[in-house]
Amino acid sequence: MTRATDIDGTSWLEGFRDRLLAPAARDFARWAASLSGAGAVLDRDRFGPEDLMAWLGNITIIRWDAAAGDYSYRLFGSHLPEVLGRDLTGQTLAAWPPKLASIKRDRLHTVVSRRVPLCAQTVALRLDGTAAKRGYAVLEQVMWPLRHGSDGPDGVLDLTVPVPEETGVNARTLQEQTGRLNRWFAADDGPLDSHPGATGPA
Image 1 (tube, rainbow, N blue to C red):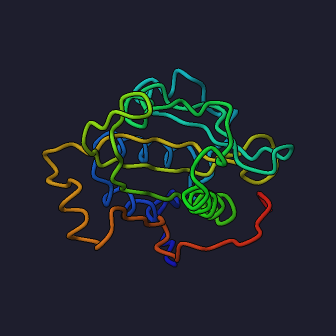
Image 2 (cartoon, one colour; image 1 turned 90 degrees about the vertical axis):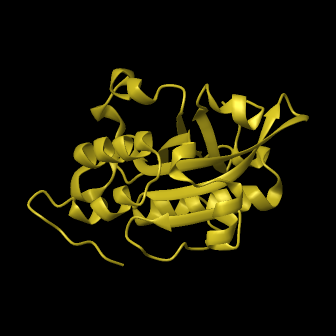
């Protein structure tokens, strides 16, 4: 894992930002890095809704819910149901199919426990409601460690946006490049950890 530093300690995040495909994702990463600094953890009390206006509708806040024993969607971007077919505000990761929920839980725990931003570039099935298929979209998801209060991070601030067609990345090309329908990478180039039995933030 590499965390090279410069005068403000954030240069280790530059390579991560440069690998993002969507201009909105790069702008979000630039803003988050400038606010979080070298530690790469955003403090919830340091920004308000007005700071997120540029990405309104694509922002999701996910936080550990001790009572539920799972991460829950405190806010689910209002534009996302148009692509995914449902609004998950107030629900936990258990709302996803079990295998997918487990993967999402692992990735979130990596962001929270390692205090490192993560990106997913994923092919998603476009839906109308829950049934009518409308083709495929490549979504770019940037997950940034988020802290409420004075303890360690307990959730993520998530931006999910469509990858513009002009990038040349679509379902076919992503599968050709990766052999899969998704690509994940962490800002520190470390491994994408598996956390069997993890019960939330350390």
